[in-house]
Image (cartoon, rainbow, N blue to C red; front, side, top):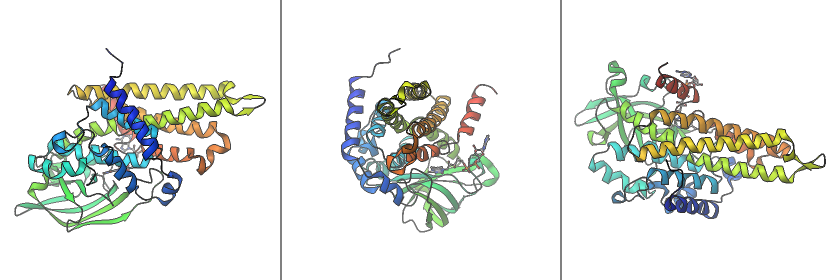
Length: 381
Ligand SMILES: Cc1cc2nc3c(=O)[nH]c(=O)nc-3n(C[C@H](O)[C@H](O)[C@H](O)COP(=O)(O)OP(=O)(O)OC[C@H]3O[C@@H](n4cnc5c(N)ncnc54)[C@H](O)[C@@H]3O)c2cc1C
């Protein structure tokens, strides 16, 4: 067992931290209040290669091994305070570009991956529906065969990047009577007749990532836009969720470290009752717990990255990562507000935004309750 970072991993993280600090130093308070997609940030992330971190070089990506991708994402999360922008990146990478890489035909890879990897196209996925949230197999969007293609019909909600995406991975059923065996994935491009963005949905946090509700109304797609086999949608979704649950919160490790360092500074500098507040055990204990959460989150996330780099299945580990990192991020952000007292409650100190951003992570990519169910099942319960 070797816990040391390789020189490449260290270099990548340092470069990502520096890039985040220098090129992604936005006025996030204003962007958050406006609640619009940080497109300038997206272009800059793309110029750093982030839109194609795990994509092979022959498709225009950086071809980083999984642990280096994770290090780069953690570094960006540390250097850049715009959690929403990095969430949009995660949705693009893990729920669109990666499934195309894993399941696409050569023609699909050549059509989409270079543009996605260069950030000229932004991706996302549309699985959730008004009546199908945690229970994805209950989805009602239909894909009916017509000639050489399919006609998609249905509604999708909570679609990250939905209003601004150039290509979406849309899940539908080719035969509702087959239940989960009918689920099938399709690539639907922006501007495709029948794909309508009903509205951009305002939300609590991660507000620089755009979220939309979509309607598919007689949306005709050629069979060449089906990703994977007919009926193979659930298996595809599970594999993409394995990566998403394992890696979408890598930037949150950086955010947690950034918050912890800020709290340590404050605990040293803020004097009350004639001494630094860090001298009170109630405060220092919070900092110790923050550190413990950060290091255990790192352990789980990088073990996941290592397993995937070995080509091994890591479904169970992915659920543990998702559950632990999201809960840790929420707890650390809440404690940071408390430790800063009244200042923590002010919008301008940017700590309350961290709480709002973190809370979303307990819901997307499968809620914390669902992850607990999955972990329990994998333990034979
Ligand atoms: C910020 C954000 C981004 C998102 N991005 C996308 C996206 O890009 N694409 C997309 O398709 N979807 C996206 N979603 C939707 C997300 O995947 C769903 O919100 C999530 O799966 C939960 O579904 P639901 O909201 O319908 O809640 P429900 O499934 O109705 O759950 C409600 C409550 O019941 C609990 N519950 C449900 N089933 C069980 C169970 N078996 N055991 C225990 N408790 C259970 C849940 O944990 C939750 O607390 C996003 C959501 C958020 C918040």
